[in-house]
Image 1 (cartoon, rainbow, N blue to C red):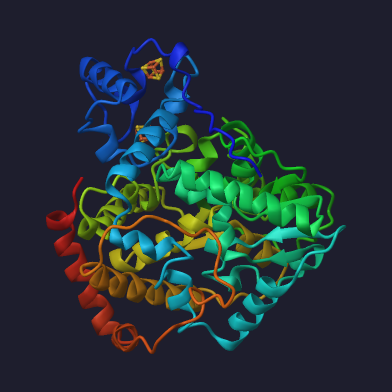
Image 2: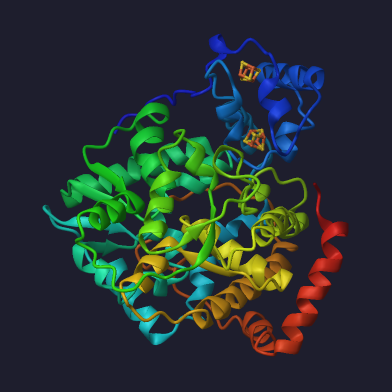
Length: 454
Ligand code: SF4
Ligand code: SF4
């Protein structure tokens, strides 16, 4: 396939440099004059000390801009420029499936036999023309029990290709735009070779990437029809094709993820209607929908210091938990698998008592399915905290890097564990003790104000 130039979604000609976007930004909240100067520096590609170092990629500024100029994508363009100058932070290897070690490779050490079986099936099935495929995706892979064993999977052929990188969704948020373009070409190749026509994505972010970003920004047009799982679930519930056996009577609050703001309104209502159909009552957080606060993930995008990344992420997540707990809801519902794993890790580190469910788990409970809740999530949260702790330690000895490969090598050596990871296992064994967990959470909380960069 020939190299096609990327198309910037920032509309320079529409922007009158009014500064409203960065003035209203829930993170920066710049005085208007300062906001005007900052946007002007960003447009001219001059040194920025604010947006590029503090933005948490929440998408909200696009909704605040009265001219529809897409200031968020201007920030992504400038991060893309910075990537060529400085590379990626060492800790970022963590979410790069072609680097070693990465979270999926390390998680293999902790998966249960049942989880291995599900993942093995999803990773190795080669789709055929006519299959309706469900993209399990990189983040839902981290807690396969959310989907595994459910009747819902009988409607699909579930596919788990870690080196599809969620279509590039999370790299896009970090401004790795040229890498996202390579991923767009790679995924097009996969879909065309398989000959599939219908693709359902577990993340609305991934559906958005395939439907909007690949064709409009990356110059890669897919032939397939993409839908997100919430849309599909709501259709089936409306048609009574998914039987609700018991109303849940939970009071819940909804976490709107960053990507849900990408097309105003499209992604916000389906998960709300789904949980209401399952018998839940919704109480909204102070910041919801277009003003929703980040789960914390986006805080890692504008990295300043490698060591600060986990502290920045959990620190941003703390604001979300405060708002969620203030609602008095029994549970916080996420409709994004990427947010879910961070929310669970944050919950454990903050010692919060609020329940956290994926919207799919709410449907499964209402269908009368048994879930390993909350044990499986708590265990996985500590697996992930152990992996992040381990990766943070080894990243102190690693250099910045560039993402060179998009696809695994044939032996998938970056997916299967390559050594015994004694240090990782030792950390994880320590976390089996509730006393150690409490101590670690306390130490993390004490260090957070000192280590975070924002
Ligand atoms: S991007 Fe929009 S809100 Fe921001 S300065 Fe330009 S016109 Fe104003
Ligand atoms: S994406 Fe969010 S955090 Fe970043 S500048 Fe826009 S509103 Fe602010």
